Image 1 (cartoon, rainbow, N blue to C red):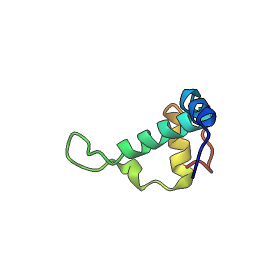
Image 2 (image 1 turned 30 degrees about the horizontal axis):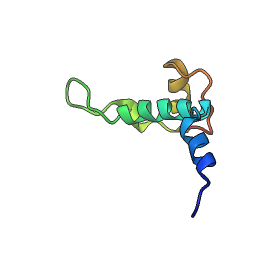
Image 3 (image 1 turned 90 degrees about the horizontal axis):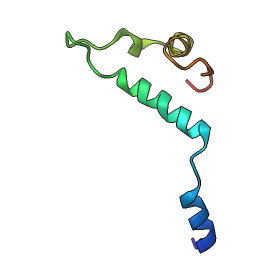
Image 4 (image 1 turned 135 degrees about the horizontal axis):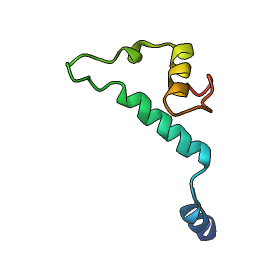
Length: 70
């Protein structure tokens, strides 16, 4: 597929969307739950469903997260 040089340069210099940044933060937080705790056990939050995980994320720095994002 050919892309015009002007379009490519505009894409390269454009800042990422706020939604993409917020989604990346949520994904990093969710992936960090797979890490083992200090006693070598998995964290209990890894087993949460959509409802509990949404509440957990809202309590831990993501007040605007929706159930559809989770």
